[in-house]
Image 1 (cartoon, rainbow, N blue to C red):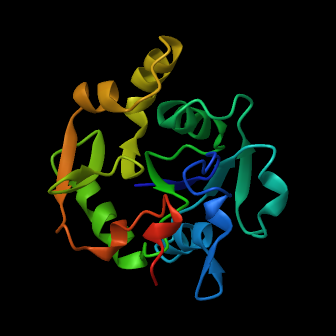
Image 2: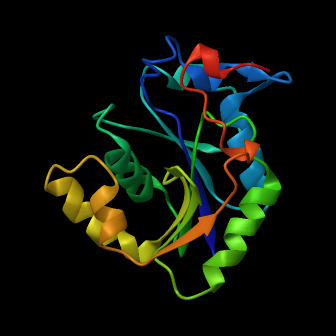
Length: 189
């Protein structure tokens, strides 16, 4: 089974006030935690999907980059762009957002092991009050539906999740893996 990694790093960070993927925790940029968690699990290739304005600020040379032609079109468009930009024949795509500094290799490994069960289309982590579609695995067979939804102008992931076989993986509400930094007040470490 082949798995490619995609780090979504093209958002506006409007709630944060500046590009949060370049904030640092333990002397490492937030986006690098996603890359390293994938690398530690031998996920290859790894693509960072971003926009033209942010591209010059990325320091990593060990990953590929894809620049969205029409940035800020929402998560479904970003996933579509990344899946069609990545140059590989992967069966699965592990999507990770760029603003999760507590992501780790153990989480990635656990999620990868679940791709072998029940032939899911999407392996989706869930907490009691949240789903995490930007920390999930998407099978290649979801691409035609993603393309259809994007063509219809859909920007959110709701329709995709409703029309596919989703394996929902429960995590506790206290799991630090999912700390998503959207506001400066979220960053209390």
